[in-house]
Length: 290
Image (cartoon, rainbow, N blue to C red; front, side, top):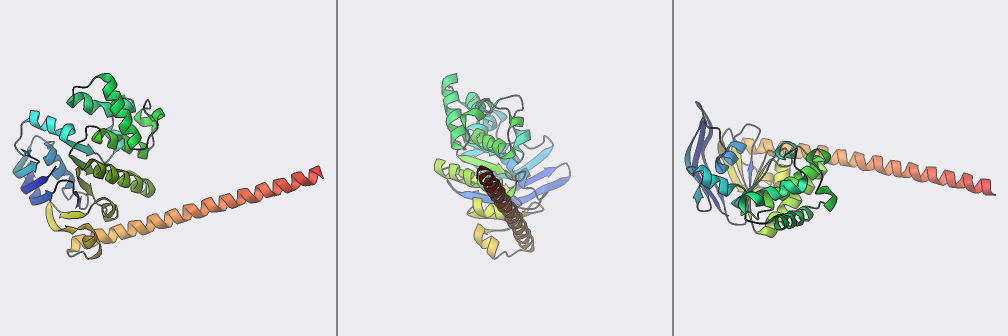
């Protein structure tokens, strides 16, 4: 699904949050929207989905395929969400329903948007569960019984089970550690590409963005200040705000690398100590036998 946002402005009360934003995503393209906290990234995503607060005022055009969600009815928006557009949220623990087991979470969009019987819904949900790398025994678990990475895999499965044409990933790795972040991003990219869908990946972290997208827009205080190929923005940032984000991403990547190196060293040391202990025990045992 293509996305064409033209002259989008969003005002809450007397405060303008988004200023004359233009964003384009082609069919099958993965595009990033990067900016610091409070820059208006999530507000743009909510505008696309028709989920802005009731006191929000929107001007401009928000074309998702053939639908302009800026002035669509709630019935149209409800059909777009889930059926044609899937959303992966920042905090999977709060996005998932705490009283529904995993398989029921994944089935829910199918129940809302398609006329399938219970067996068909279950089979599709289990197929999607396997695609995100989770085993059958996870199907009956509840969200609080899962790790953060497992919860986000369930969130991805729920977003993709209806085979939507556009995925909006709104800070989907923020609550995860660096290793799990990479796993989740790579999984999401693989599934989106396999489905031939488009994706808008929203984040404040260029390090994550470089793994997820080919082209990006940089947002600062509600305005697009730079756009282009993600790698080009990462290696040759032009605006001061982009340079700040790139510097922060490099610092975070360095810290994550140092942390992983330290963890690997500890694991290696523990492994060595275990080997020494085992060897000592074996020697004493052999002495006893002798």
